[in-house]
Length: 584
Image 1 (cartoon, helix red, strand yellow):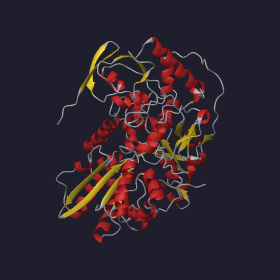
Image 2 (cartoon, rainbow, N blue to C red):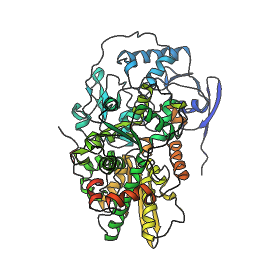
Image 3 (cartoon, rainbow, N blue to C red):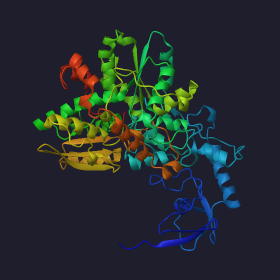
């Protein structure tokens, strides 16, 4: 292998040696020299649009945009000269002059990259006040609000949607001063090919994109003495919520989270991991049946509502391959409003179920007609990890100081298998644990299925279960899902089992999780830290296989009957239908 040529340069008087092809920005950061950025998002949006990262290069006229300018031998760079600082201030001033500066009431206040730069550059006033572009606020979707009066045209959201998810629901429309980020025909996200995955929100440096707020209805129900309010929390929430309170990335705050929820006034605090165990029982049973009958293979998991919306819009011919199982929180909601309500003598109409999710597509999912039983929605409200953090702060709860508390029984008992639902490959691994023991009728020698773990966008493996060889594939991120769907559509796929999650990394990186700045994403592997926390929860669990959950066994025995049976199908399964990508 040919050794890569090394380039020698000087940045702010510091000698730096980097491989050929490195940008000035990369070289500076390698030397611990900070250059401010705004539009830059590593490996996603490297276009030099905002020009906040400009630098001076000796011997050259004008400024060099450091995020796209490659280093050259002997280059001498100045990143904070008086001319550079003044130019950056002017750029920042121009951006702010066309920005709705409602910081005190913005959901991103305190976690806004534009606000951070304004503080850093000591902005006290706007020199270039003038005409502002005015845009309508799009709040018609159940999941996402677009307020492009706060947009800075950095195009990070566009790149996340187009390059990572390969959806292309948004792009730049119009020209000049009228330019803005919008959809085909400037219609609502509710009427175009958006999947509500929320990766655009995670990419946005300001408050131009945020989740549809559901906290007010939750507060209203918590104050209503005639409503019995229960809450369930998804596995990925507990390894990210602490970040909203300054705790290290990947800290498992399950105990503090439960304590905070009880102080907020919820009547019961349950664990969606229990719902995940039910999902495995139903999905595993469904897979075994399909495998034995060689029917509609490969079977594809259906836990990710963003993914389900994607296949309904883009690959309706492949819908028979989807598992008919509802997602874990919807299954759990159905059980709470039937079995639990009966046991506790609660009128289901007075039982209000709140799901705390890492995902904004769950807001869309919960209001679908298919998620109703006996005229009642399985889940009544969905709040994200970020919304829960805001509620905790609003209630003046000192989160970090809370003593750990446990989930309420009997619906708070879950397995390690349920926990790993939060990471890519987790649903597949949890299912394989149960399917293996059912098919072989003997305990697993090794409980971990490491073949389906890891951060690769697509993971293919052959799993040996007894004398059977089962070919599986795991994909995360809708761009990778498209690859697998094309294989299935063309008849080239020979898989029996497929897991797809809409968000890169799975639920731990969902569109409702704490938002990290571009700089943090460059320096810390957020995905890896959160994933490791999920696997640690699994490793420390007393029970690590869904079918061994005693609560689950009791509910099947007392109420549901056998997995895949009539009542289980009625409550825990759903149907799918073709959706038009554009509805206008």
